[in-house]
Amino acid sequence: MLLGLQAVPSTARPEETAAAQTLTWTAGDDITRYTSAPTTAVAGQATIVFENSAATGNTTGMPHTLTFVTSDPEFNSDVTLNILANPNDDMGGRHTAEVTLTPGRYFYHCTIPGHGQMQGILVVTEGGGTDTTPPATAAQVTGAQNAQGEYVGSASVAISATDEAGGSGIDSVQYAVGDTSDWLPYTTPVVVDQAGRHTIRYRALDKAGNVAAEKSVTFTVVPPASDDTTPPETSATVTGEQDTDGAYFDMATVTVSASDTG
Image 1 (cartoon, rainbow, N blue to C red):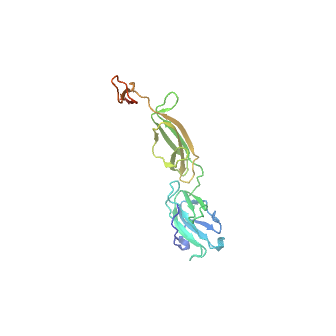
Image 2 (cartoon, rainbow, N blue to C red):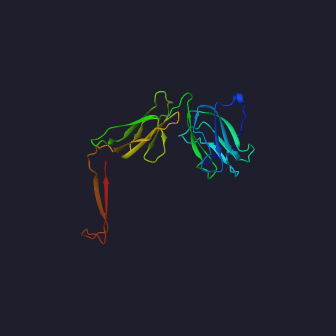
Image 3 (spheres, rainbow, N blue to C red):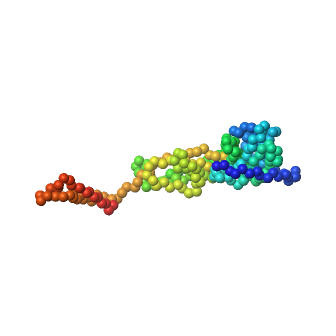
């Protein structure tokens, strides 16, 4: 989805009140990547610098944006940033913005059509330490089973996630039904009551942006045994024009019906 292009007003702050960290992105003539970009940051106040100028390699006057995505549940959505810069704008292509970052991951990209490969992820951790270990995850399938290990009527999948001692903590747990469906937030056990073979994928993210490796459980649900022991009732009627002996002229129509009370 292309976000609207708008310049975020640049701000000038006195040296003594500057943010604790400055994060700088640069761009030039390349439409496939930012010339430089940070990969990590610490939670808290930050000065964002985006420069797309002759000094950073832009020789054509081409515009670029630095846009933080806020519509993807996999990433943080609390920073709205959409800076449009080009070497010939009023700031000479160098813009700044003040933001407050929280632990997690921010997805950024350029929204200029054709520049979609210019993208990346900024991982933000709590101050005072760096958590680089993803959460541990597990899933348990429960329900009534038959002798073949199939779940009768329905199955319930409970997913758990834990972070290492001293880690940043669990940010979210996600699951997906099948091999290709989108990730959904996990809040309660997932109940599957459709007959057939099913796969539930799952993963977890911690507040430092570490993502656990995707895992899955596969199981089969079968319909419950029926207590109906009565066969259906059937009947048939024959219609058509008959002679005096009861024989049908030319053709006869046979209508068959069946009913069941089970």
